[in-house]
Length: 77
Image (cartoon, rainbow, N blue to C red; front, top):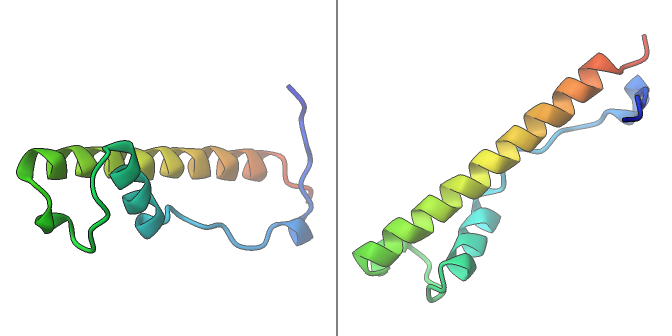
């Protein structure tokens, strides 16, 4: 595994999970119709979409944390 050193100028702004994008992705993954609000879905389909959305948000948070840890460990002083 390579050990990349980061320059402080390279680090700008980190972005968290994008909830609207993860909602749209979850609707596609669950084969649900495109709706503005999840309450318009059937209860079993709504639970499936919410579970998939939470999974996407959680995985993006984990990825952001791992990237942040790597940057902090490898930053040039």
